[in-house]
Length: 434
Image 1 (cartoon, rainbow, N blue to C red):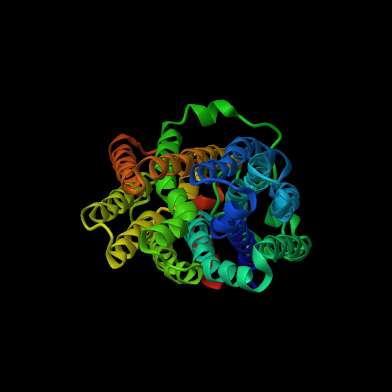
Image 2: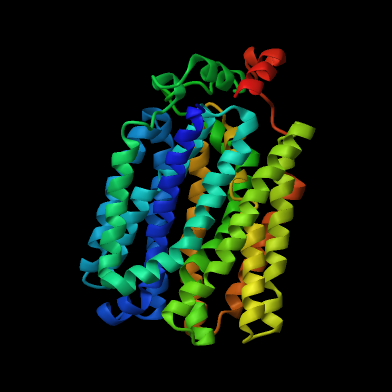
């Protein structure tokens, strides 16, 4: 049995719960406005508050993951975000919602730094593109794909308050399932066979077999040009992503006068495109790397995808008020954007293979920063202009900037290899049996 993929499956479940939780507020927005008297501008600030906690703890959780291991940090984080989700109906108003969203962001922040470290410890290099595309792309877009119908049906069945309580319970269920099986590295798991362990080790770089690290070298992180460009590109894609996650239901409801159930149905299309894009990205990045052995090829793929994502949004500005055009353009933009979904994490591992949690935390903090900026900027634009055009212009411009940085300013990083990687016959033989 390929137990490494059981570990990846547990992580995928974590990501699904994570993203359905964080997007739930967008489907309860109308109820929150009535319950607590908040305005569209207030909603934008409340949405941004999640990313304040997320950004701060993405930076902190990366070193914590590298120091204490993924398992302990993830289980603790899940309890925090389950509590924040369950308490949301009792927020009491604007300030309470802000504080609970910050707490939710803090609890969810370790998800991707920890998942990235797990992938680097449980998988050989040649399998990470597909796995991280599943974790950072398919699971994210897939959770939002199924999240709309699930959340709108939960609201219909249990009310908007009951929806939050059901989501909190789902988090606790994940902890119960993950507790006996989720391990920091295969060397800590008694259920991993010696054959599979040798296969994993043969495909790893020096220093990638440890469950946790004794120290964190911030200098290696902060001096890495490629990692800074990853952060810039991830911010650019993040602006588009966060706007659509928090504002797509509001956009469809307000601009096209759709009911909440219709919003849930129409919101499926962009995230379905995201699933396709994420799957394509995982396949493309692994195949290109297998042929070229060029780490920089990953930046080229990201750059082209960002350029296409930004260009896809532009037609909305010239054909306003057309639901079909809007859905096609948004779906294309999200689909192209999600091609990059798993590549950010592969690039983070390549940048700092001995401390992937910290590197991924840095990249994730840049993504979270866009989550602070994007909802508030869109809220400001909608309040001032009464439409979403300004937000679409900003996201297209950011994609162009991020694409340019990826294509023109990245460089091929140095490599680290183990003695095991030099013995290709062993790797080939084990590949045939695994």
